Image (cartoon, rainbow, N blue to C red):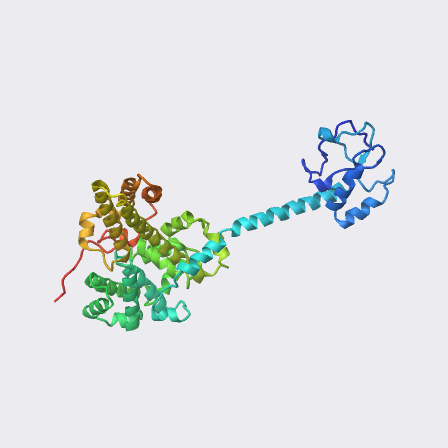
Length: 450
């Protein structure tokens, strides 16, 4: 038995933690003259599990050697007791283990909540914006598999979408190519340059049909010569290594970094070893909307379903387009607000802001971006230029009125975000912010080939 000094603080033992949980508190062996015993007993009975409560009802004997005794140190002043009162550990080891187990369980629940806190957002992106690979094509009507035709169709899809052309237009073109059967390497091999040109034109891919027809011919040569007519052999050649596979897929003429990202966004649905994948630009969007950037966590929340991961990646690409569209709408509304109250200067500023907003919206909806846009508004095709432009327009809106301040602040903050993206080398501009000759080579043919 150890005699207790007047003050009792932490109960330190060789196996005890520095701050044991309340359930490991000492109970006084001799209850005489202990004023708080009647008040603490109900609390202890609640804190202790039934087996411990039952044990506490049995009187302890002086010669009991089954329960270890511990030297005790002073505790907080409010727990002062008379000198000479004796305490024993009430199965402190078991209580401590149990308390620690409860702490671990609480911590596990907290970590589980933290890891799944973004799950609804990830699923919401899929539900509202997610697109299956090769969406709106005949192949998307059936379950996608790693058939040679499917992989070739995904490569063609990525190649055509690398151009600064609207997503809807290229989607129609890809669908038409698949309907014709050019996703079959044999049919594409047997086609002539003129036939490929007409197929692209009929699909709506008119502006770049000549260069596109040439690139499709080069694609046949690469697939036949290096992969025996099946791009699945590219995966085998890379040893299921994404970086090696990326380098190999970029050997396709007209498919640069942007095209490689688009390809992996889709192909992970049938090449599970490439999952989880989200292009860096879309991953930045995921961080901005509060989903996070931990791909392994996101993949786990999607039950490690590669098809769902592909839908999620494609959905984030749509979100980034919506951000630019939202800026365009805010600009137009902010420009309209300049007319109230009307003055010559506010009308001029409002007119310019409306024109700017309409132009930005056109970049998201126009089938193709006109050549003069590259000449006279080239600053819009870089993160730096677009960021400075957004900040400039936002500053024009910052005056006289709460709504104007809100609109100007939103546009300005998005501009700051674009400025930040300029200094992240791994993030490339989206397809409608890329120069006309990027990813396809400098050669452009605009006339019909005779």
